Amino acid sequence: MFSGLVNGTGKLTQIEQTDHTIRLTIDLDPALQEGMEVGASLAVNGTCLTVETEQPGRLTVTLMPQTYNLTTFKDLPVGALVNLERSLKIGDRLEGHIVTGHVDQTTPVIKREVNENAIELTFKLPDELRGQVISQGSVAINGVSLTVMKQADDWFSVGLIPHTQTVTNLYQLRVGDLVNLETDVLGKYVAAQLGGISNGRS
Image (cartoon, rainbow, N blue to C red):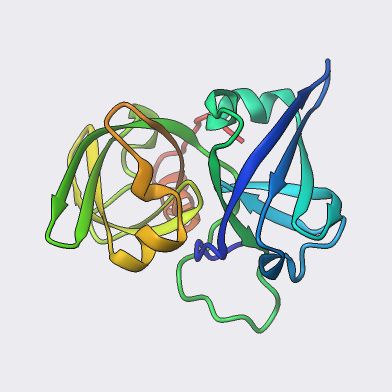
């Protein structure tokens, strides 16, 4: 379980693919590694993964092909920045919102505007997730907890304050780029009670 308050970014330095697994090597500031021991849960661009190996300034995580193909990892090049968040501990403050690390869909940026020192990003809202995204509600974009500014039938927008631009990779996004999207888990339960949801993502 995560809060969507990203601890920082790491650099994807190696991608190893075999028939059944994909291993990612990530270089990061050793100061970010507290609590990232082998076996720990780590959200990488909003996807909950397990730390497989760890040494100062470097760690590896492993993905199953389904997760790899249903997230943006399949499109990321070596050298890409990824958002990193350690899992919550009992007693931690929940200052973002509850993020499971189970990505619902990938979705593209369809508009990017700079408004003074903020960046406003507009994303396509997948048909399967309509009803789970509402104005002033919460979403996780590449694992970052954000408040929905505006929402229509087929799009929604969020704003990036300077702090978010500094500590995450979202400032790099341009029109056409895909992101990992996870809707608010509480909204999922409400939607399920009102008629059921099925999106097939994990």
